[in-house]
Length: 440
Image (cartoon, rainbow, N blue to C red):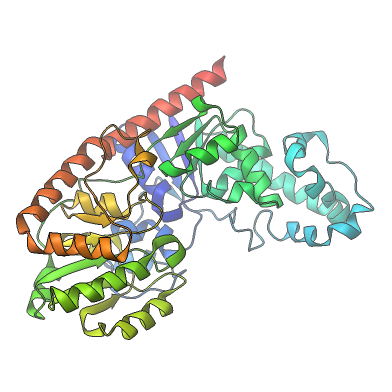
């Protein structure tokens, strides 16, 4: 079985391909994202330094002895944000002038029929707007996709890349991989949202990685048999307990408890302002030599920095640039407690990565959201308000044995319910179902 993974947001495509190849599936990853978090080097290479968001990491990785395997393909033919010219982006900016062009509208040809139910009023103007030049360009792009995708039994499209499905290559089986993009995008009253919604509906199967979006799947009227929960890809053979260089450094600096929060500073999603208030009270009343390490990313970093100053805990907080995963694993191992998010009630990569490393996790966790996808709930400590977070930190800080117990439970839970073999096997089952449905 040959599988192509397209759209490497957060290295999910790369990781799934890697795990599947380990399990015997001939999987390739098309890495067309340029952000550092979406480059395989961020996951694999022991990089040291601070990097610009779209800096190319390959030269840095080669300098420390890591190069991409030959099953990683590099091609930027599709920009999911449509902010650059390759693929549809530049040509679709004509949509801003729809009222004028609508007077000269004509229909798309039959080869673009799959677009018509959702995009007819948007794309129908483009032939006239850009004439044969635009049509030839789109035909070349579609032809390139047909040639590339046609070499595989299954194409798995990540996030906004699922909007490629309606372009209609009928010989290809499509699996769409949702990693947060189902929450809002498909419901936008704009061509991008409508195209993505159609992409999910036309996919042979949809993989959901965020348990809370099952409600959105129902709103999109996806058949229940067409979507399946699969955890975010995680290789627990790498994310594991072990010694830590960072821990020694922290202790040399006089701190006796390390709290790590890798989550981004978007308060409306992660609720990190609640953590900062709880930590300030925790330092003042219980643990004056505790250290909180925060990562310098997110839309409200400056706001968090100001709050740290207002709370008077600058000496107890350290700011770190986002860490490549080799360094992040060391930080997970060093931490006494990892703090994730305190609003949405579910988790992405941070919580299972930390648990795999044997570190207890404090976060907002809603059991009801997870009942449909996990037979056993993860042993995270649920906390949402500053008072609850403070109480959780106080309890864990006072009991080394409890931290160790939760760490062992978390590691065991990951091995049973979030491990690499489970993830690869579930993908294989999904592919088999998609291929079987295509043979009927």
